[in-house]
Length: 61
Ligand SMILES: [Fe+2]
Image (cartoon, rainbow, N blue to C red):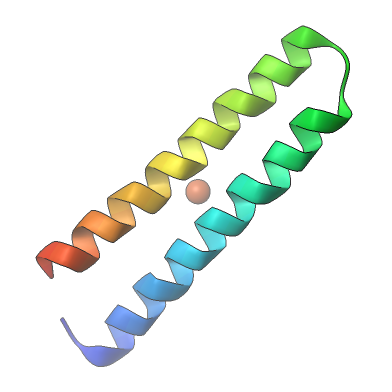
């Protein structure tokens, strides 16, 4: 994998993890359980994105 691409993937992973943290904070700020569930579903999506990027990084595409 080209070095620049690897660096971009590492930044993408950091961004996805950042999104997980931010959305988790948001989920903890709402009382409505439906809204909380929707936000937690988004958290799971973002975590999945991070995992996908990490797998691609490990396999080198
Ligand atoms: Fe994402």
